Length: 86
Image 1 (cartoon, rainbow, N blue to C red):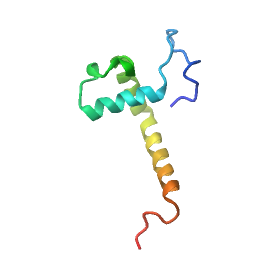
Image 2: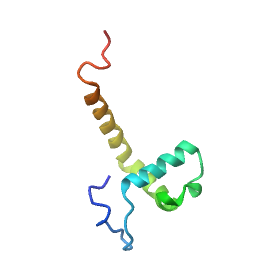
Image 3: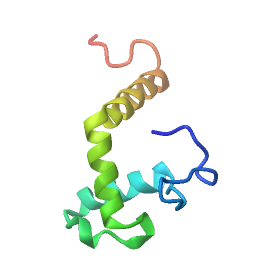
């Protein structure tokens, strides 16, 4: 996910780029509720933008990197030897 500040980021059309956290929340909301893309609340951005960003992130490995980072943070928080069979 981009390292740019959301306030300074602009899309190719000059619109303000919605921050990645808001977009991710919208994508999570869509899958948690099982709703259609068109029914995701506008507070997360347009459904078309959410779908486009979802497909781009799935294709370029963004979700895989987020998952691996979350795993690494969980390991650090749980401390040495956590999860090891005793």
